Length: 196
Image (cartoon, rainbow, N blue to C red):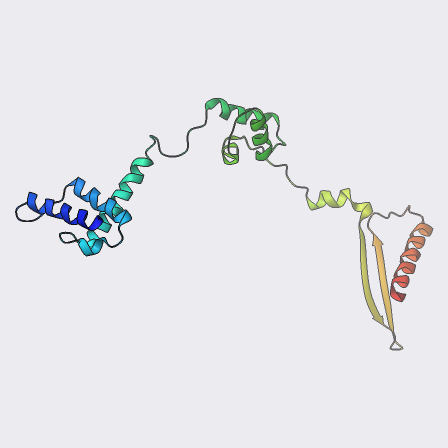
């Protein structure tokens, strides 16, 4: 059936023209439609190469999707000025809120906005400067200890093993007995770990 239809259409084109057959828009649409449901159409093609039909098909496919995607303005729709101002106000009034928190608040208020949009329009508060080493050390002096382990060869060819603990915050007013008690407790703990 499709073959008879294809041959008749080609005869109509040949009868219509004298020298070289010229194809109109309707003729091209016919062959594109025929290509969709008749796989063996190449055997009936006489006046047009199969590659030409494939080329037409691609052209009309491009034209169709170009027409389909025309919606006026390219890109994403613009965000209302009201929502932009709300994003700025929320970020200014709540400096600890990040982009996800502001987006969640906008969703609660009934505004559907992407996280990237919130990040674009929110006012970024400067991050607090991090603590310097000097400040860190002065804040934690009482908690910092220095530990060292080393060997000392003696004159009699024996090795002395030294383990030193220095507490940074220890002042001259600290009770020596307290420091001695801490060292003994640490020594007992290390010996008990050795025997395990």
